[in-house]
Length: 319
Image (cartoon, rainbow, N blue to C red; front, top):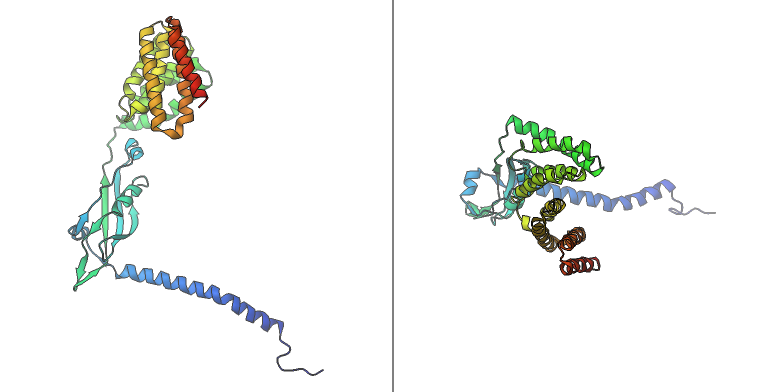
């Protein structure tokens, strides 16, 4: 049989040709990526670096960053440093974080991205420039006592909380008392800690049939939490009203109990509106409070008012 040129091909040569066809798009993609990376690097290199005080002279719109609430509560401070590129049009085109606490940097980055500058001119042409910008957040100075309290409080409170949760109320009293003492040595902004430690100490006393001793703790917890922003729609603030109302009910001070239950219901209703994502949780707590309030009304001989509260609680259950 005659063999024509090209009729037979080596399997290796065929595979190599196929491989070449398959590799070409991959190689092309790599080349494009390399070109893009090179262009980005060249763009960064082409931006002229200037001092911040020089850049500030052209700053026309400066949005001030806001310290995040959690960072403020935790007393986090320090300096955030960024490298920014300003386009020929005066817009911040890129931001690089150089240093700073991770709880503070996002706030500064978000603010700086909104800054606007007059175009920087060189040889009659608008150019891109780079500069370093900083934001300093004061760090609270803490005494040695505060530092020690910060270290010791949270383990003590966690033990207190767990003991109350597990019904070990007699043992919990000592640990909760310790948590209260430590909370008073914490920095002044630790409002929730001072309030919560007293609340759980009082819970332990109530469970041990000592409402008279619990009342001053509930009162102080309520007084402390009034300093929290938006407490008028804070479900925990509502619960603390109900806690104190319950304690007054147990010692027979029904007028005080009535007023506190009424306030608790009002705050719970506001909390449901203010934070719809927690509606199910807050509604369940409101329902429980309404039923307790109904028992108080029955104890006062106000059967109609008690029935109205029970009906309101039942209505919540069907929502």
